[in-house]
Amino acid sequence: MRGPGRHGPSTFVFLLPWLFTFGIFALWPLLDSLWVSFTHYNPIQGPPRFTGLENYARLLKDPVFWTSLKITLIFVVGTIPLTTVGALLVALGLNRHLPMKALFRAGWFMPTIVSMVVVSLVFKNFYSPFGFLNAILKLVGLPGHAWLQDPNTALGAVMVMDVWAALGYYAVIFLAGLQAIPAELYEAAALDGGSGWRKHWHITLPLLNSTTLFILVINTIRSFQVFIEIFVMTRGGPLNSTLTTVYYLYDRAFNSFELGYASALAWALFAVTLGASLLYVRVLRHREAA
Amino acid sequence: MSSRMVGAKDRGHWLIVGLLSLGLVTMLLPLWWMIGTSLKAVGAGLGGVADLFPWPLSLKNYRDILASGPFGRYFLNSAIVAVVVVAGNVLFSAMVGYAFARRRFPGKGPLWIGLLATLMVPKQVTMIPVYVLAAKFRLVDTYVALIAPFLVDAFNVFLMRSYIEQLPDDLEEAARVDGASEWRIFFRVVFPLTRPALAVVGINTFLVNWNNFLYPLILTSSDTMRTLPVGLALYAQGENSVSWGHLMAGSCLSTLPILAVFVIFQRHIIEGITAGAGK
Image 1: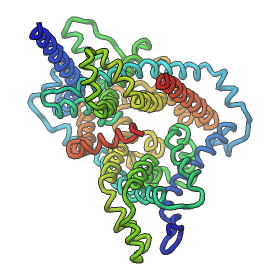
Image 2 (image 1 turned 135 degrees about the horizontal axis):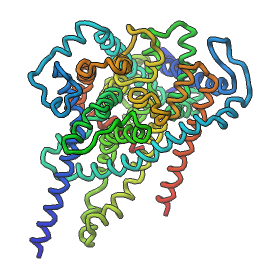
Image 3 (image 1 turned 180 degrees about the vertical axis):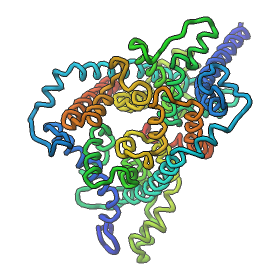
Image 4 (image 1 turned 90 degrees about the horizontal axis):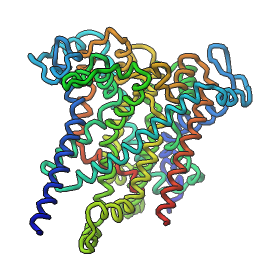
């Protein structure tokens, strides 16, 4: 009955809009980017020229690339545990009988709908030498600090902001996961004398396993791509202390027009991200099986 | 004994409520500061705690940015792009989702895997070829460049296919028996039934697109084609001459449409976010 092209437009017409955008903005760029990563390509000088593995060899010897990868990893490893554990605790709290429950939930979620550019602008002021944070510190008698101008604190300041901005989003996902757990399981545990923390350890966490995996994977993919915060707040500085890999490759591509090298950087980061995602899947699947 | 235990439990509960409230204040303080600073005409942004309580209230910053400078243009650009992208996603994700849910066609399996794979590919990999392509066809600084890459989002197609798959297909079959054309079946029978899912698609597409940054940044070069996030970010680059009052007024205005959508459609937004987690 349901054969293609029985009458009227065929299935092809239904697919056409997506085939168009998929081809032009996903499939072709993916292949082209891989090809360009094996070339020397400065659009001002001319078309791409095949150079084999040269870009990848350069990347392995480029100290700035390794610095950027280290900074990206510090960002990922530093923020994700905080965001994940924090979001779970907030979700457990919001899942209780609270006064003005809806208001609580909306309030916690609010920062995540504001654009990252706006959030970064606000925090740029907060962290500035004469900004809000230092004013508060002065009020309680603590010395101020030029948070984004000091290479020792700039990355940490951006990471704190990222946790603030992401917490509500993942809390909402955890909350949905919590609400899917049948209440009878907790009632049974209460009869057996299970206390608050033990009940969460033995019931909540195992049942949230797939939610946790989902959150870790999407947050990892997102965090490896950290860019807007850096663009708005620090531009990679001071002294490259916040130079994440995506910011570095953006800088190579659009300020130095080294499109070949920037593409190689993009693929290297993509490989690292995929590796990290697969690692989670292995670890958490293993836990599920055990 | 037992009443003492209940007392301890109560204290624990109120401790959690207290911590949650404290956290809530931390969550909302930066946003409050943004509003306060925008409503303060003199010394805005560097007044410390006083920026939280602007007095006298003034709309001068808002009048300034709307009366002169490119801010109005940023807003218009963002609005045009958002409206077209939302409309495109609502129509096209339903069409494509319908094809994947209900039709058989050659190459269906590989194409579906291709669609899922695009969810995994980071933007930094595709952005350079897309930029080169746009430059080649002289599309940098056009609405086409700002709109076309986002017209059919793969995740939206994924949502629509799941939704249409679980709809009963007897209405479609009945229409087919009556000799309705495939277009008619789609527009008169399937499309109306998918409204709940389309609401999720439309609203979340709006939220994501309104805040979109990387592609609009690289695909525009003149002030007249910047969108709000890009325009605001570049304005703030002028390190020392930044007027925080103006910047925060712009930030507030750019957040307003998002806030309105959030207040009206909160339930749909949550649905959209959690849609991926169950799978």
